[in-house]
Image 1: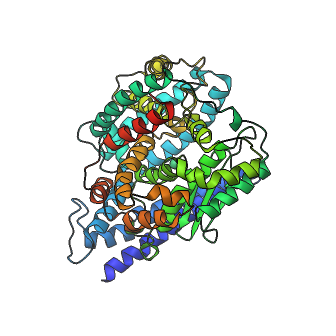
Image 2: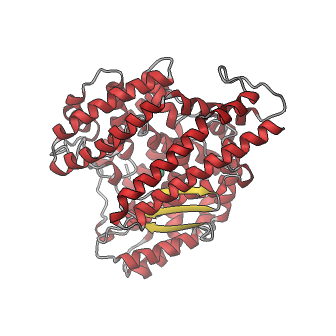
Image 3: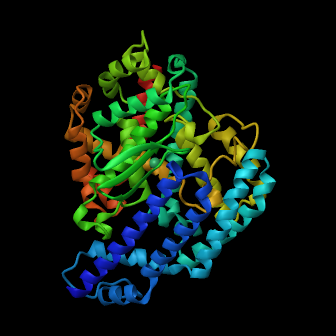
Length: 498
Ligand code: MG
């Protein structure tokens, strides 16, 4: 059909522009000379503007308008993929919901705020960030109104990152998770503590990158379609299934943070590499949501990369590479899974990490519905840290000023981190059923069967299903926190022996 072909062509151009922008960002974070910042912002701004105009202009809306009713989203023609049209319409609605003047003001405000946040964090002075954050939250409320919502203004913000998920559903799952993790943490703290001192030492960047190469090969990362580099904060970005970039960072006094980052970002990359190439540009060639994306990264980072069979295979190579003597598989496995409450989210272990996210989710929803005033954030933050983790940050740099997200206006983003863990656990129940002997296979270094399962069940579908549909299709059960609760409690019971 002529209109459909036109729509696909336009969407492919938009996707390609998006890819070029992400490549510019990747370069900025990895190799770009520091003096080039000014022109790089100009380049990104120009391309973003072109992309936005392509997406919201008359040509695009006229073409889409021949296939779906632009008011209601109802398909106007038969024989086309309904999920694909629905997603085309959703993207279009989101892109056109906000007036250009709003988008520009938001961009200006957040770029200033990011600088103010950096300064505030450096000086441990929340007051420097306060007026900016007040404006950002006011604009986020306005954004929610412009996009529209049924129950909670936060629904509109969350939906941008996790389509179809509501504030109420997240609150329910998080409250069940919170209860079980807080009680699990108490049991862990009442048990004999794990020794992880042998993970610390002096491990050069070169040595750590060499080991990452061993890992990349071992987990079948296709280097003809992707590459690993270093940046301040680890991330992954992809322009096409044939071009994925991942980054990691290295602390010279330990190697696990680098290994975890590599496994994590590879998981994101595998998803992008597994998307159907023939659907590139269409929503059917795109990832479902941030939460489902994160489920793939957590699958590789935690379910595979922090498992005992994985290290049964890789520990001998690691010991030889870093000259670690007298480390047994059992003590290594316990050490890399050590639980200890700490102030910084990105450094948190698997058990306490969700508590950091739940804290942010609870504060965000209250900030957006006006129950919590911005000036009261530090007190509320510290109170919740004490309630959930039993520790109080000595200052705001180690507390409410630690994350960049709020300064960028990314309200609604945090929950996807923990949803990703929960989705991964939910999906894992089906994986275990498909491969009851997965641990034996993994311990022998077999990896390919994992890729096949993830690609077949998740990656190749793009956005043909919503997150909820996908989770139910694969496991036969609607999504809930149950699988994740069980996984955490079984695993840590055996590690801490209670
Ligand atoms: Mg991630």
